[in-house]
Length: 331
Image 1: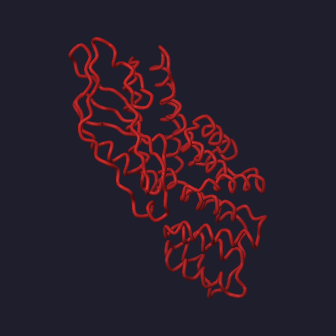
Image 2 (image 1 turned 90 degrees about the vertical axis):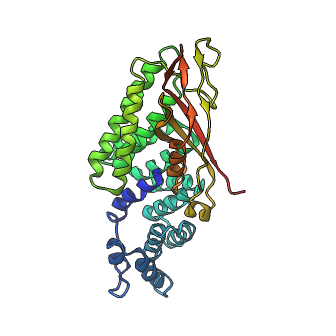
């Protein structure tokens, strides 16, 4: 899911850089800014393949291809732009973005090159931090997000990333006072999500984040005075307690591959933090390890449809929080 937020904010960097002049006939920039991405792709491709084709032509072709969900082609177009102007950080950033969508680890190399060319790029830190979040490294994801915020306090995507990293950190807390420490971290995530929404305004991404924020607040409330442990690898840490009966999973609908994820060959694992309500439904589900290209939403939807018998303590049904993994493989 986090990929869907990246491109909106990368555009702020895209159009703030230098732009090579183009002829009136090659109006791909105007088409692109008007949201006519198919027409922009056709116009940019024509310009890029002409004898006078420039790095800017290939760059805008890559941008249009990303919007048209042609990430593999976009990677090639950004590569052509880089070959013509290897010192232009925007071209490397575009390549990092397209590779990140596809789950290509070379996105990290491209984003690192951006920082070598422009040390003040919060967007590059965002890509690096997002890659760390996917690998489960909450601390490094948090550090990159914080670096982006220190470079630009209005970089909304960095607040979103830091909030997600904080949520992942909360799931790693263990110990007798884990509940309150977990709750404190989750409150930090709420603050960062709020900041993202304040900065992003009416952005398309904001509607999904608002829904996630409501779920996040419910998790904060759940841990108020409760030390409900989050198990490792779906093992129930309280299963041995004499007064405790663990929940029993019933049906677990699979998460469905999206067309674009299958097309791009994206594989991996999405991890969901799920609240198994005492009333027998998954009331809240948060993606803590994303994969992208619609697979996060598919996993979250599947998690909400799980059927189970609630856990109980001393004969009373209780709400518990657990981690659920969804594996996406093509072979």
